[in-house]
Amino acid sequence: MADDRKRPIAVTRSSLPPLEEYVEMLKPLWESAWLTNMGEYHRQFAEQLKTYLGTPNLELFVNGHMALELALQAMDLSGEVITTPFTFASTAHAIVRNGLTPVFCDIDPVNYTLDADRLEELITDRTTAIVPVHVYGNVCDVERIGEIARRHHLKVIYDAAHTFGETYDGRGIGCYGDAAMFSFHATKVFHSIEGGAVAFRDEKLAPALYELKNFGITGYESVDSVGANGKMNEFQAAMGILNLRYVDGEIGKRRALARHYRGRLDGVEGIRLCPEDPRVRYNYAYMPVVFDGYRKDRDQVFAELAARDIHARKYFYPCVNSYACYRDRYDPALTPVADRISRQVLTLPLYASLSPDDVDRICDIILQ
Ligand code: T4K
Image 1 (cartoon, rainbow, N blue to C red):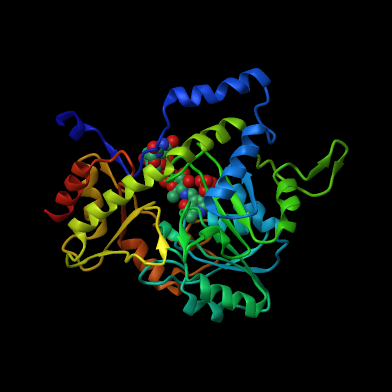
Image 2 (cartoon, rainbow, N blue to C red):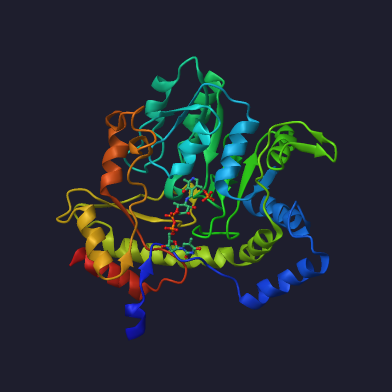
């Protein structure tokens, strides 16, 4: 116990399967020497994910960012794409790297996803798509976003990096919108070291996604599109296949810890936690806490935890529209809720191997 208290606590810690199981998975790779370029584990992993995520169409990628960037490219978009500034850099970068212009929509003050009430006023004759983010695993207003998109003939590509395995109204979260990107980064609830996938509605998108992750190659002597290298390798796929066997247990441990946090912090004046929507089956990816009128501000809590080697993170501060690479073109004052929440929010450590005692220690520091 005493040693445990000295161990630094980061915002997350990768879950790992038993080493012997991974080594066993590697043996066929040594025999075949087939290490990448859509091998046998790649095929198996994609099939298993379709079942687990409940989505009929899915393509694997080397990471979540390439998955999103190439999904946007496959949609053949132009002009403006509406998205949220309250996200990781990847979301806006994927839009800009496709030669598209992000238009930032403010966020809902309760669950911090794109505010569907603000969406329609941002649509112009140049808008071709919406990229909402299920931030922290909080599900966007998929019904209203879908309805607005249909009326204006816009594509919807969800950044579902945080929602692995979640369901909404009993359907896999990847079934909403034209496409949804999942991240399997080492810091996620479920990972393949690095990795990602796109789930998509129209099966006709499959060849485009496959080609774009493999340089646009269509045969030994033909290249039909300007693709990238977005291929997941066999070591990643093997890790994904193994982790998939354990992910439900991991989510169960996270759920228990998240409830423990709630038991300590819910109802404390000046501390706000995201409400849980009964239509969502959550994966407990993050533990965001907003300090709004609490006797300490976010930065104070962050510093007090850091002084005890507990490293919570300010996901997502600053907002994307305040980044040095974007701020000349955008005014964060136009997305005031996102700007405010980004200054008040702290994501507390949450991962399967965290102990309830750790949660108590973190809460004691916050509440002392
Ligand atoms: N869209 C959204 C909304 C996203 O949040 C992300 C990624 C993406 C798109 C893009 O997906 P990917 O292309 O990454 O698949 C981390 C992750 O690198 C990133 O995947 C994630 N979002 C973002 C929210 O967090 P950093 O720079 O904060 O991670 P880092 O290296 O500081 O790690 C945080 C903590 O995690 C460490 O203190 C310890 C632990 N950790 C980290 C690594 C790398 C481990 O336990 N094992 C590890 O291997 O970005």
